[in-house]
Amino acid sequence: MDNKVIDPWKGTEIKDYKRIMAEFGIEDMSKLVDQLPVKNPYFFRGVIFGHKDFKVILDAVKNKKPFVMMTGLMPSGRFHIGHKIIADLMVYFQELGAECYICVADIESYLTRNISLEEGRNVAIEEYLLNYIASGLKPSKTRFYFQSEGSKNYMNLSKFIAGRTTFNELKAIYGDLTPQKIVSAFTQVADILHPQLKENGGPKPVVVPVGVDQLPHLNLCRDIAGRMREYKFVSPSAIFTKLIPGLKGIHTKMSSSDPDSAIFLTDDERTVENKIKKYAFSGGQASLEEHRKKGGNPDVDVSFQYLKLLFEPDDKKLDKIYNDYKSGKLLTSELKEILIEKINKFLKIHRANREKAKKMLDKFIIKN
Ligand code: TRP
Image (cartoon, rainbow, N blue to C red; front, side):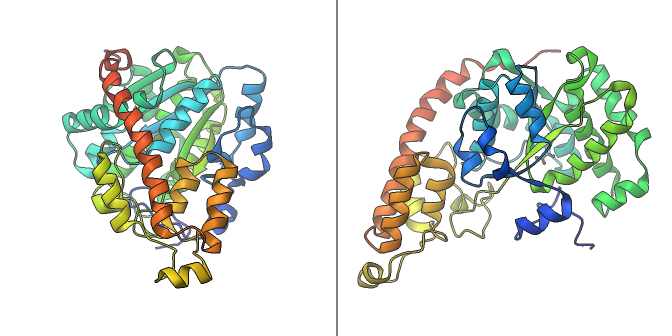
């Protein structure tokens, strides 16, 4: 297949982010981070590496204008520490004033993964929504909805989109097409645009945080938004997040279907400890003597990467760990201990928050 095509349903592996950025017109986030009104490590540590039109969002924040953060989830699999980024970003943008739209992609998972609407609903609530609420999502600024249950105008929008594109355009964007993929794509375009419908307060900036695999949908959406002149849509902005690597190496995937590759937010203390000790790929040397002499390589060490990307927000502390590991002062077992302690401390609080979240579910699930 044409290597210019990213397949959002296959999870294309991205090796060269620089090339993808150049090829698909993604701007470098590092040029904008100084303008963030509230600092956030995800923007500084390379987790959010690129964007499209993020300046529009920064301007809305600065001028205290309404804006939306829009995201969608595939209701399949268990919630792991990689999913935590999106949860934290929801809370971050809400604090900056955003209203948060969260879409359960139950139509998409029904069509492309054979998941029944009922199963999708349960997974979305038990695995995703509970963890989002436990992370600090506010009900007053959240609209949590299912693709199968959106409003009439949302449903119509997802169909009217068909009149603003062509089969050739879709083929150029997605490569191989099926009816299921086309309906999923149109539904996602409607997801991203509908916060700007009149019933939702009209045109306004919308930011969509996504992995690069979702880029085709975003490009299609931005093109179609411009063609639906009568709606006066503001072209949606996007920020792009890198995938968190799996336990077994920085070039492996963290996958819900392989428990040895992932730390789940429901893992208990022992499980976290065992997984990290047993599976987390180490950049250390084979023997203690060699490690003391040559030092470790934090850049390929998964435990260090988790601290950097997710669990150690303090730059000074992180730098010290980096330097100590590199010089051989800090051993692999000690580095792993630091990470285990950090994760278990976080999970202890998160577990308690999850229990509280169970009592709050009603505040988030809108009955139509
Ligand atoms: N396709 C997305 C995924 O596979 C889910 C999704 C549906 C979505 N609608 C969305 C993501 C709107 C962002 C915005 O995860």
